[in-house]
Length: 168
Image 1 (spheres, rainbow, N blue to C red):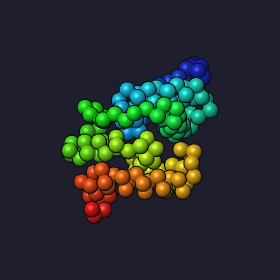
Image 2 (image 1 turned 45 degrees about the vertical axis):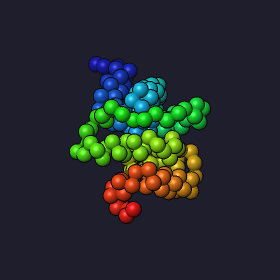
Image 3 (image 1 turned 45 degrees about the horizontal axis):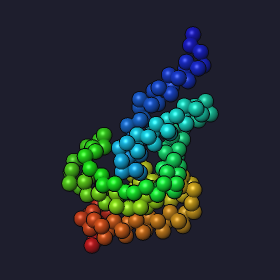
Image 4 (image 1 turned 90 degrees about the vertical axis):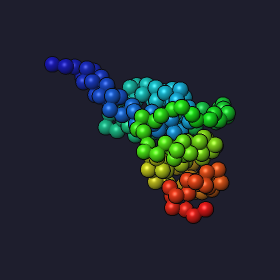
């Protein structure tokens, strides 16, 4: 008979195998850099492993929240410079590579906070209240940041207006 530690380890290993690709895509959207994305996922998975017994009912939510918080901490501390996104193919190829490149380049030109809000709202499909909770800000801040980010995207990449049904 397997011990509880062995069962926990097996469940964690299954979680990592099943969800690490999705976590990496989200981390890449947040950071715009493959290496930083891998670091975010690795940090999140270490936290998940450390707290597995307590969070085993919702490890993915915990991992995503950890990634978002770690990303916010990084850009608050370092205010690192933005890098152009190129050459990275997110694990699920899009049908239209030109569109994918346009979205990628447009996201890279947003501030880290604007990118985080858009990723949470439109890629993670969180509500304004959920996004505010993840980012540790008010709902009003999420609303205004979303409005500002979308406005900036309209200026930076007017060709993306068709994605949201907005006329330029």
